[in-house]
Length: 342
Image (cartoon, rainbow, N blue to C red):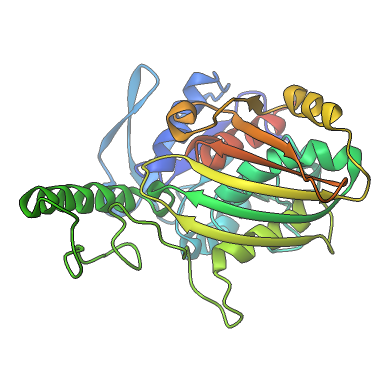
């Protein structure tokens, strides 16, 4: 099922951080929508938000809102997506969902356009966007897998506070400012017991790193770490691939980094690996990939590529991407582009 040539598009969660970026990207890429509708919770109804050179008036998410809509870009909490995706499909729309609500459903394709665009054709009304950290890793890993056959991934992520929404960024700013003030007053470090009380995160994020993203499971893994495992297997159609991840929240506003160690079934040719990465869609090579370089950009920046000195089948590299763009909004819009006719 494809979209009409000039679809009517609804962005649900339009006032959130990712929703606003979705609107920006739709305008930047001149997506051929005949109409774009901004939808959010009832408390945001009536607000004006920017779209291209104009503004949209936010509508409330309520029964009947999807009548006549062709495409729904959904960026909401999981429980909202679980409740509203099916009604949107029943009203005749195709849904691209950015939450985790549908990612593990075997009937719902999980798509990164640079890795498995063909999966879009299997949709039954809903297409899932992967987790932002997974996208940033798989975009550069997928083209290497196609040549060498991925067997094992070991990943450590360095994820920005915007991954927890606008409240995460605000808490970073608040806590950092408070600690700067206290350090000035003390003429030294912030000292034990002076860290601000957290609201969004498990501990104060100001000048700190937190090795927990999501809930902790019985085996000690977090829900974010398990996403990397299950989503990688589904996207690459590798049900037995080994994925070991440690996900860490760092005190940055935008941009997720990842240290990646990838082992393949075949010995690698290092020069060929560099060539594959340099020519891979969605990848940009960088001498020092970092969040200041990637913020506001669409590519996954890759650098520090090196051989594993102990394993001829393995390489290591570092990758950074804008989690609000490629990690969420851009990936959804790219899926929407695949759905266009022709």
